[in-house]
Length: 429
Image (cartoon, rainbow, N blue to C red; front, side, top):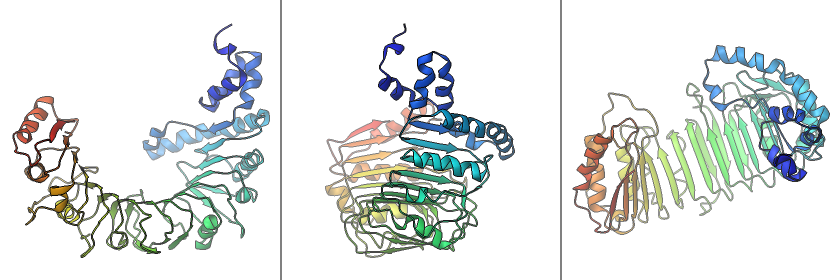
């Protein structure tokens, strides 16, 4: 008898929970014991194809998706018919574009009857119209819910997710604005909400008023989508982390300027979303802002200790200097180029008239990723090394495409620079 077969059932079920569902079902032929054991696995994930398949050409993706979905419905029905686990910890329906709304409705009903905790419905590559059962909107065990490329035909007047903590609405199309509001209206434990906008989502104003919310993300990863007409009205109560990615609509923040929010990630955000004016108690901030966005006059980030700035925009040095000058307690500074740049980009560096207070008194860690050694980059790096009098470590990371000899040569250019901190250790990452 092999060692695995000697393990107790409870442990074997935990092991099988880590295996893709299609493989778990296939294992039933191994022995009589496995014939019944797989039916008790509390996690069912269907259509779990590799994530990198999302990058396939659209026509190929559609052809492959049709092939994959042809047998998916039969597989899901067959699995659920034999499955006997009293509780479903996870029930994921990935890439179900070829499945009917009635099929999905029935599968979700079964999952709710099994006290599902983590539910995902994900269409790819096409959108799918679904009719979610009314029992789902009153499911008391659901803790995580993700809907992707879903067209929700109807949301009942009463929605109550009493245990929901994480809610992801990715490229969802709603019947109207009120449908979106109802979806999140009664989630007393909701902590993490992600909203990705899409074409024709039938919502102009997204209103979020969830007192328990701690993390909120607005995303628009469809690069050709213009969101100037969108409005997000966010009532922040105990919000701790705010992420805005590729969003160019208007953001209205309602609430007291309390120190609850400690982290903000602002990546490609328009000047209409005036976030820095609203929060002065941030402790961590990541910035990648378009050229037209200027640092707000008179705003001091008195609690900021960690700053990350993307160097992809041509005027990134202006925002960089402005934040340094208004962040007296900054301890960690990170520079990185997270996006591609145009060949004709021109970056200028104007040295501050006086050294920012954070460099003189607090900065301890400096990190620069994708440092290419351009003239402006070199000037900025030298300025930091010369003026950061409390600096402990400075780490420079070079692009992977650079040869080792080139990296060493560029590193030596910085190594000979006199440093404001005698204890500063310069490292090559």
